[in-house]
Image (cartoon, rainbow, N blue to C red; front, top):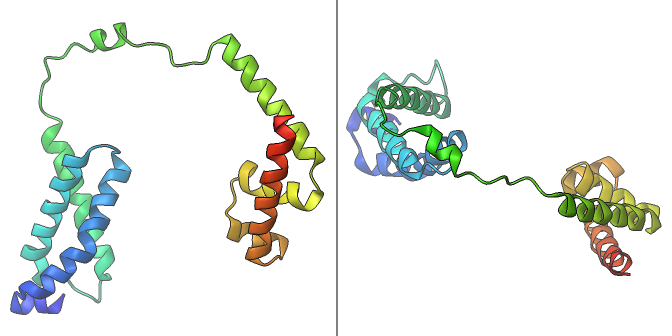
Length: 175
């Protein structure tokens, strides 16, 4: 950062850009999924500010990551303020007139309930070690690594149990 601030070193800035631009874009998309153009605009605006304000960066006050993402947050707020003033001629009532109900119908709900019951029953037929691992990963949402640590098992053992349990569960559910 020092090279960018003092020497206006374009190579150093290119390295900063290559490192932070994808992160800033991901930050923007996490806040507003699907808004690719907004993410690109925000990234360009932030990196421009990094170039222009590099001399104001003080490593004693914040690390570089914090400083750049503070700029990103401020740029995003500025963007939202700037673009929220536009008046739209779109009547939102038309949007809701043409919407279809995405909720499942009674037939789909019955089939889903039956499938859930079949899986639950089949899961109980598995050896405890395998059903325990599947429960932690697929029902509790834990990662293989978290399950490995919690059960005090090697990661490879957890993965093997998952693989074996899924094969057995597939056979049981298919019956």
